[in-house]
Amino acid sequence: DVKVTQSSRYLVKRTGEKVFLECVQDMDHENMFWYRQDPGLGLRLIYFSYDVKMKEKGDIPEGYSVSREKKERFSLILESASTNQTSMYLCASSYPDRIEKLFFGSGTQLSVL
Amino acid sequence: KQEVTQIPAALSVPEGENLVLNCSFTDSAIYNLQWFRQDPGKGLTSLLLIQSSQREQTSGRLNASLDKSSGRSTLYIAASQPGDSATYLCAVDKSNDYKLSFGAGTTVTVRA
Image (cartoon, rainbow over all chains, first blue to last red; front, side):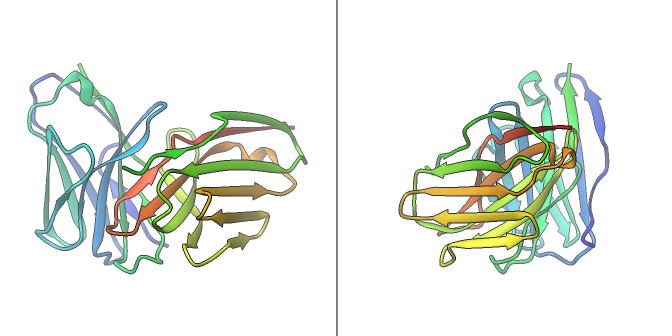
């Protein structure tokens, strides 16, 4: 089975801190994604990557950056955390063939105080 | 911009009843549509993926239909069970990229 692992289940940070969210997948997927999920808004795409060192902005990239130095790892970085970035963050991965399904990690619930 | 809507936001049914979940999208130029299940506090699990050239997909008690021209998809769950209680989300893959547009989901409660 595909496994997408997010390093933290819950995270509490202070305003202004630099925050790293890590995601690792074990199926050699080319594509990796970061979403945030807020009640009533569904999932919104922050960034995605279709190869090592490649990244593209999603719908809400402001305040975030990403890093993909190795194929299996995709990191989301909050340069200076703000309270409006309190959310559930979900990482996902897939093969590049678009008939393939998307596989998600269990999520990181981030609270910024 | 693709808008994906799921109505109702919540649904409660007695065990054994068939479930019908709706998803509508504004731009019919899609590549595929996926239905996901999300348990509380967990990530999403892909249930069914329908290519734009397909009309439906089936897996066990689940059947999803797609009508691109009207911008609608329906997920049917036959003979619901308490274990089907979860939030169900649909997501549309636009034709130009790999970005999925998600609906906000329908939260289903199946009462024993």
